[in-house]
Structure formats: C-alpha cells, structure tokens
Image (cartoon, rainbow, N blue to C red; front, side, top):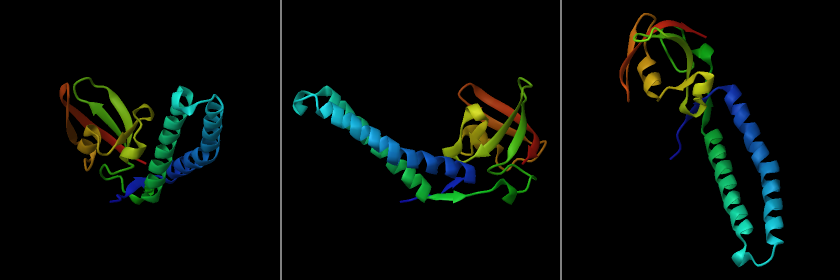
Length: 157
C-alpha cells in the first residue's frame, strides 16, 4: 500500500541527488569493501566480510526506502495556500504563553521535518495543534511536560 508523500520541489531534488549518490558511489564503495574483506581468506570466519555484507544490506534498504518515498512524492508549493490560517508549508510566528518566548517555524510533511531548521512536521503534536489556526488564536498542545499554549502571532510565506 503506497501513500502520498507531500514535499517541496527542493526536498525532492535533495532526495534524488542522495539516491543517485547511493546508487553510484555508495554501491561502488560497498563492492570495494566486500572485495577487500573477501581477500582476507576463509569467509566462514571473516568478521570483516560479514560486517561489509551487513552494511551492504543497510545501503540497499536505504536505497529502497528513498526510491519508494520518491515514487510516492507529490510536489506542493507554499504559494498554493493562502495565509488566512495555518496550512502545510505555512511559516508561523508563535508565542509560548507560559514563557513568552517567540519562535518561527515552517510546517512541513513529516519526511521534511527538521527541528534544527525550524521545520515542524504537520503530524507532530505542535504541528497538529497549529493546523487551521488563525492569527490571534491559541493552540493547545499536550506535551510530556504538560499542557502548553501557543498564540499564533503571524502567518507568512
């Protein structure tokens, strides 16, 4: 069962490049590692060979997952959505009602989420709570530390 994965054009290009590198350079390097380990003698007692084969399996799994993700990818563009409320790809400025801290985030698909780059997945607790909110509305988020309230200060592209 395949599912649609919504991504920006930029993210799709990044994943396509990663896949290309894994399929070319990654596989070539892996073949060299296996050949090197094989040259060490008896394969039944060769830990280097076993490790290289395990690593090859992980590489092929990663290639398979990337291929699957890309085959189910659908491009979305922030310009397709208005700024009247929070949608996927919206950039939002929010204020933590308890601490007063103001933060900027972009809501993205789970596959693009990267907290260090202020990209929140729409299926994360904060992402879910913000979706559909308008400027001035409060998003209530249940986190392990308790309930947190965020006010939507701005929605922009």
